[in-house]
Image 1: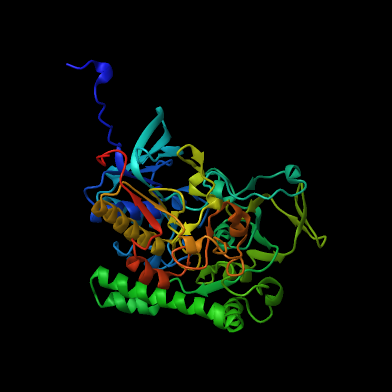
Image 2: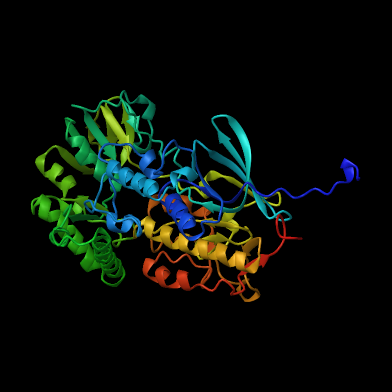
Length: 504
């Protein structure tokens, strides 16, 4: 009988086939598609938080709601039956229903923070360093699916202004809204004019003494009814929920397509229509030119939806006001502006945006070498050149995030199936010889979308090329045709048969 030192060691199988990082919209979509399409795959969803929802768990500021309609923001496989623009509690209830209806919660491990991810080519396995309530553990898997979103949940973007430490009241970023913040009867200044500010101002007005929205420059707003007659008519027909959802989903997709097309083909006419929607609430006597006429064309930054014009109603009533100016400094009693105007405040809210991050700030290594994803090429906006067995989800900037999350989930499941058919244990994107001299373009081209959080973080994001599959289209109507039909054997995906369980 051979001695123990000469016994053949059987390679240990990885703990899981797939690990999904993040239990927000993207992670739930990934879990659903894996459980439905690849039930033989052993998978887990890891999330640092104590519950599902991602963004909707992180943000707890007053009035928080979606700025996309829920018929496209909701999943294609889970009908939405509420109003088009929904509150965070309504969205969380919907997500929890989706998880429980499809028995996905058993796959989710809460309180699990992934710190490092190391790929070993010889074994064809990822080793994850995971911190949880009991300490740190190592978890291995064949495939890593990054669904951690696109911004840092632990902190928002917080500019530093002169004198901030002199202000006598609290300075609050919406991403870290204190549960015990007393804002009743207070004078509040909200710095910012994007979707968060547009949501906060009318919500705070319900109990505050006065709310001032302070902006450096105007933003485009889309004032629309919270619901519309077509939805009510359709629901009166008593059609199956799935039919209603699909009809309304197509309706809102068509509207998004028209607005996006107009933003490129007739931006001045679209701008005039959007501004007219604001004027309808504020009246001809309001200084629209100063406060609501942006210097950029529509959709170079995200359109902020204002259901039932609640922001403008608050301003018209006098409960809120808008100031367009720059901050010179904070003072003990508020803000001194570049114009010399003083804004007195008891609370200052800095609705100044997000901190873009890559891969959830996880340290990623391939065979011991750190991965700098800014030097990687994006493969269909899903995989990264030189990084095996990894997919990532980045949604749309002009449409609902979920639309792309679902398309990516379909693609990844198809890729995993293809790997099984080929008996491949790894797949990695690589440029073909004729693509090596391809010009590099930024992940998001600033001339098409120039929101501050995107511009601040472009240097940490992957590059894209000038042809598929090295393009991140940001176009749902293109992706829904091309991703399901994408050739998985076009020579840009390199498959290998090695490692654990390959027989090598």
